[in-house]
Length: 242
Image (cartoon, one colour):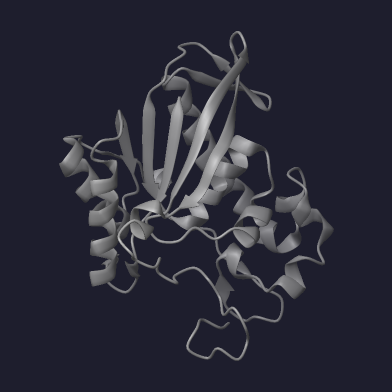
């Protein structure tokens, strides 16, 4: 089975929709998918993800299934020296890299600011719903692997959000989400591809073949949107700072 995890197009966060650029990105993505196999589409309930998915759903003739748990990861926590709660993936490197627990899949959610924000409970809800869906498609989670009850070569697409994508990858790859939130950056409409590998009969693992591909944009000379990145050098004041 192949999984496609797709971030929404360039966002208009205020109105929870897409910018003009975002609509163009979503259109190019749909055209890229036109001749490619997609069997099922699942989408976040948030407007920016649903708008992105609409283009592909139309060109593929597929009705998307809306899943509440695919919304942007809703946990909010206090960063060091901050007075307001923020998303877990916007910590400064000088802060989060000093916390040894963040590097551990078993311990990352035990850090006090995480427990205070009930991050573990929210994370558990998302991965439980994800596991249920994968089980319904023939891949049942057992420990760190998947028992195959219905081997298939279907392609399943998820239209969601960067923070949420990292949670799904954390589950599939058995990696602390903090490492994914801070060590990766998925551009708007980027596509991450994972394939199941059943090297032993009935036992599968999902392996990431591509992360954050923007081939559909590059093919048309379009640069990916800067959204989700921070300034490449501090003196670039036209780019995002804290």
